Structures are given as C-alpha cells and as structure tokens.
Length: 413
Image (cartoon, rainbow, N blue to C red; front, side, top):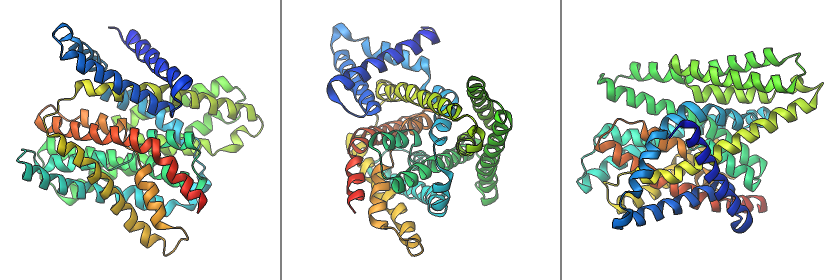
C-alpha cells in the first residue's frame, strides 16, 4: 500500500470513530478515537483465533509495520505537534512558575527514571525474567516524562483552571524533551559499549538539552525576523511550517534536542504579540491553522496508538504488566510531591492537591511507545514495549477520562 493510501485510510478511520463518538458517545475526541481503535484491534485479535480468519491479525500487523509508527511520529508528526502545543503557552504565566516547572521537568524526571529502573530490575529478578539492568533504566527514562500531546489535548477539552493548566502543560512540554534526551543518552551508552563516566553522560546530556534550548531560541528569532513587517497570513503560515520542519531536521542532525527546540520556538513566536498588532486577523489565522494541524495529527496519532496493540508481543506475565501501572503512578507522585513540598515553603499553593493533579493528569502517550519501538529488536525490547503499552493505555483511557474530576475539586478549593 502506498504512503498516500495509508494516510487516507488512517484519516478516514479516525474521522469515522470521531463522528460516531460525537453523535452518540460524547467522550473526549482523541480518547474516543483511541478507545475505538482498541475495540477494533480486540475484535481483530479475537477473530484471528478462528481458522477462517487466521491471517487477519497478520495482515493488519504488516500494514502497521509498513507505516513505521516510531519514524512517523518522531520524524514526521512530533515537531508540528510540539510547536502547535507550545504556541499558545503564555510566557508570562510560564515565567511565574518557571522555578517549579524547571525542577519538575528536570529533577523529578531524572529521579523518576532512576527509581523506576531500580524497582523494575528487582521485579524482573524476582520473576526470573532475564532483563539487563541498563534496559530497566531505559524503560524508566521513556516512561517518566509525561506526554505534552496527550496532556495539552485533555487540558483544552476539560478547560482546566489556568494556574493548574500552565503547570501541567509547561512541565509536560519540557520534561518530555528532557526525557527524550535522557533516553537517548542511556541508549547511546548501551549501544556504544562505552564506559559510563560522569563526564561522558554530562557531555551528551548538555549537548542535546542546552543545545536544543538555544537552537529553539534561534529558530524563534528567525521566524520573528521573517514574519516581521509581512501582512500576508498565508505567507506567515508557510514561514512557520518551513522553519519548524527544517529546524527540527537540523537539530536532530547535529545531535541537539529537536523536541526542546520546537517547544522554545513555539513559545517564543506565540508570545510575540507585536508581530500581529497591526493585523489581528493574521494572529487568528496562524492560531487557527496550527490548531487544525494539532487536531488532525492528534486524531491519527491516537488511532495508531490503539491499533499498535496488534504488533506487540507479550512475553511477560499480565500481573507484571498490571503492576507496572501503579509503580509508575506512585513513583510519579513521590518525585513530584517531594520537590513541591519544599517549593511550597517559598510559594503559596496547596502542594498536596497539586501533586495529585500532576500525577493523575500527567498522561503518557505515543511518544513513550515511539521511544520503545526505537529500541533494537530483542527480548528486552519486547518486554519494554509491552510494559510501555500497558501504562499508556491506562493513562489515556482511565486517567485521561477522569482527570476532569481533579480539576473540579481544585476549582472548589
């Protein structure tokens, strides 16, 4: 099947699920699309057990493997989704919570990866499952950051309180970039067989993280320079599209963090109000365009997450898969609540309630699956992919559909 037909098919199925949901079910659209894809995948698996439909699962699995989920998301959809999500972040609000967001995005993410890695290593040894220590930390690195694509989608749908929304969205946008950098750093050390030293880890981490942040600022300034003085909405959109696409490719090619670069450039250009002061319609046009890009790509992404279950080999007990969910949530709460407790000594907010919201609202999504898929083939990869998928499905379906109750409680307080 050609790339064009694959894209049309995925978009058509996503629209079908979205339409049925809008008319009859009334769930949050992306969650409904993923739930529909999961039900469809379950039917394919059940039918595949019948002799007359024995090849059905194989056909769909081959189709999904041809699409290459990891490449499609990481090299095709991610830069546009991150830029679209960050362009509406208010820099003023972000600045007020910069310290707490910075701590949560860096320290909490790194601590979470380490703790989950240690716990998983102990569990695998007790269960007698051969999984190396390095890969346990690799799982910790990919599952610790929250997914900004899923988080921002839920925030928009349920109209989260502004003070909560900026913390959730801001932390998610930056911890995602930090998590990817951490994952790539660990994966590089595993595949290169280099001795792990503090200087080597620091060099890789700083190059990607600091380089990505700095390059994102340069991209934002470039967009600002090119758009300044132009009163042509279509050209402004084309400029942002070109800079986002080429900028992400350059960042990744020169070993900088493309995701962090997209986040910084999106926040920078989204807060340059003077660019559109003489033509407010241009700002509306730009925001509408990127909101449309966000909605379309999100629909396809969540459809693929639901279908991806057809390609996963479950070589680990269902008990361990289920156990991974509370472990990730508990570690998330501990690594969020602890720094918030100390930060609250200098800021006036209810750290206990905020920690609970950040834990339950910190969704995992397609990025975690894409990172798991990028691991070289082998038994370690299969185990990590199964664990990741279990956490992601619970996160989006259960947490994503119930987090609104946390927002309601927060508003009452």
